[in-house]
Amino acid sequence: GVGHLTLVDGDAVDASNLHRQVIHTEQAARARTNKAASAAASCRALNSTVEVTTIESYLDAASAAALADAHDVVVDCSDNAATRYLLSDACAAGLDHERTPLVSAAAVGTDGQLSVYSASADSPCYRCVHPRAPARAACQSCSDAGVLGPLVGAMGALQALEAVKLCAGIGRSLAGRLVLLDGLDLSIMTVKLRKRSEDCAACGSSPSITRASIQAYDYEGFAGPAHDRGGAPVDAACALGADERISAREFHEDLLGGGGSDGVPVLDVRSAEQFAMASVPGSISIPFEQLAGRCDEAAALVAQSPSPGGRLVVVCRRGNDSQRAVRLLRAAGVAGAVDVRGGLAAYADEVPAAGFPSY
Ligand SMILES: [Zn+2]
Image 1 (spheres, rainbow, N blue to C red):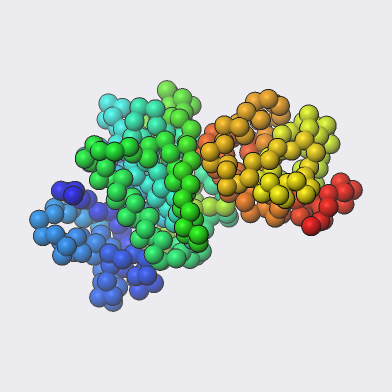
Image 2 (cartoon, rainbow, N blue to C red):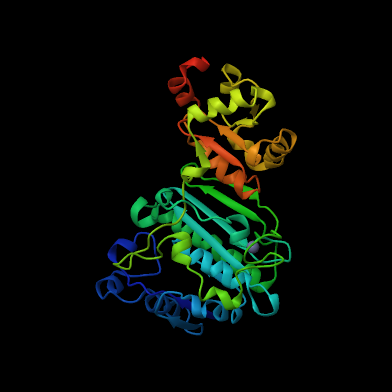
């Protein structure tokens, strides 16, 4: 196992955490014990020889980089974007450009995500993959969106697996890949992430975020609050932001302006059967289930028919799978991917002149 653990948390255990944060106890919740202290006690109860250091305050920008340097692996178990960026930057801006591998997981609702950042010379950091913070209004956290308790345990165990592999130097880490776990049908997709970005503000060739500047960087201004006044976490995994979506009307204008099939490329992620029933002229079909393995084809669509901003419009029936598809495509480097709010159903409803059938 791991010989030395450092646990960082400024929050206190609450009864509402217990269904998903299985390291804590009812007794710790009653006593409002600090979470780092409570987790350390559980570790020692499991194994009296493990060394555990606790830092009973929230991770702060002043000490994050030094903390990352002092450890072989960093595990991000936070649930807000500000802390995710701070941790990633701290790992990416290591002493003498020596990056610290970051094992990152998230779980909201019934979906989980897992990846390893900054682990090899060409693997991306979190900021390479998400150069812009998600829109705050679109963000949901476990505390306001809810999460299926066992899903958090499953993602945590997978995260521990990646951490142990990195410490032991065995197997193939998830560096450069993202695992998406759908808890409802227990399907797992692995998506190839873009490579480390030359332009990345944290780990590119001329980074603007350095060890010296991390302390002054406004993480909450960039990514939203890390904690609300009561100390509860605020956000985590996100649906799409407003600038990543267009209306059915804008979609129609894109098609007219671009001359249909010769203009803005359109990717349809519905099933092949639905695509055969009715589709937008010139659109290309890649069913959502296959998209993870076919992101390269989507990127090629953009390269073949250049549109302003490298736009690629993704449609599905009602605008749900298309959001997940855009998330996936953007992670794979298709930065201009947007989806149509309400999908083809909204297109049929809101733009009757287009004559797209309701079905
Ligand atoms: Zn980077």
